[in-house]
Length: 240
Image (cartoon, rainbow, N blue to C red):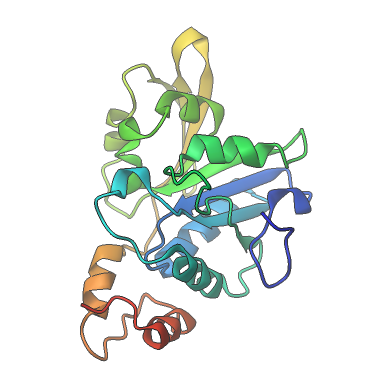
């Protein structure tokens, strides 16, 4: 990966923050709900920086043809705009060996560029987290990195605990502050970690529904940033 420039993707090692949020996903397309989740996680957990990283090859979505990585990277850059503390990352760029991008491997690589005292928080939406048992080395991922999970109001938070791998149990509900629920996790060999739940994410947006809407001529979904919509139209994306 090339060193970070003002107009390009960021590398973690080029800033000194010690609480780093990593927000990976397909971002097909990136929308205001993504930005809202990153902003809420940053504010609630006191993160120094959030890296937003479109994934080149999502292991669980290999049966769906995603928009080219270069387009999703460009749209994500536009979606972030001038959001303070958020940076585009190419940490999940296409691999030279053509294999899928596994988050655990990506984060391990990122850690080599971080200060020794840094802590990485994984940010994701509740619906994505419900598939955690299918993720590569799920227990290792959960035990090594605290997760920050955004859920829309009314989401049944008990589903989060039910989605955990069988080897992980919820140790205790440690505290509940305004807009934050913290759960302790216990894995094998007494390993411990945490889940941070954000139950008040107001934007309930489906990327699938956005793509369907964009197939209609002249559609201008309100959940898309204007610059992102302009890019989509200019490049003829999401047409049948």
